[in-house]
Image (cartoon, rainbow, N blue to C red; front, side):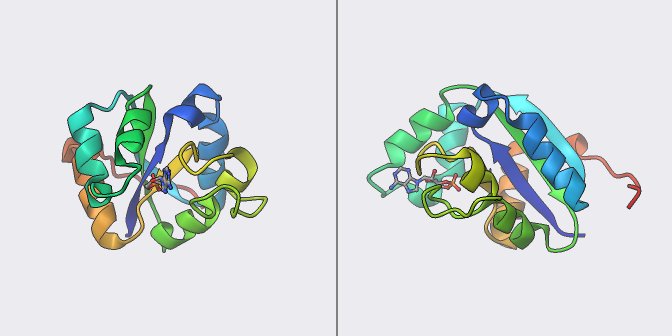
Length: 143
Ligand code: CMP
C-alpha cells in the first residue's frame, strides 16, 4: 500500500494544529503508521530540502524548519500521496482553496503549516530520512 511522509511545520505545532490535521487524515480513511514530535537538525533539514539548495530562500527554509519542533508522520492508503497533497492545498496559502489545510490555516509561502511528499520517489526518500524501519508499524484499521 502507498505511503507518504507528512510533516507539520513549526508554525503548525506552535498554533496547536496537530490534532486538527491528524483528524482530517484519519477521517479521510488514511492509516497513521508512524509519528513523532522532533527537533530537526540543520543537517537533516539541508538533506530534506536538498533539491532547493540553489534557491534564494534556501537559508530561510532551513532556518524556519529548525526553529522549533515539527510533527513528522507516515500515512498509508490508496493514492495517499496525491490525495494528501490535495488535502494540503497549494504550496502558497494565498492560492490554496478554503477547506484545504493551507487554505484554512496558512498565511505565507514560508510558514505554510505542512509539508507532504510530492511523488513516490520523494515519499520513499523522505520516510527513510526521518524514520527508521522499526519506527513504522503494521496493523489492521477499521474502515
Ligand atoms: P514545502 O512543501 O515544505 O517544500 C518546499 C518549501 O519551500 C515550501 O513548502 C515552501 O514553504 C517553501 N517555499 C517555496 N517558495 C518559497 C519562497 N518563494 N519563499 C520562501 N519559502 C518558499
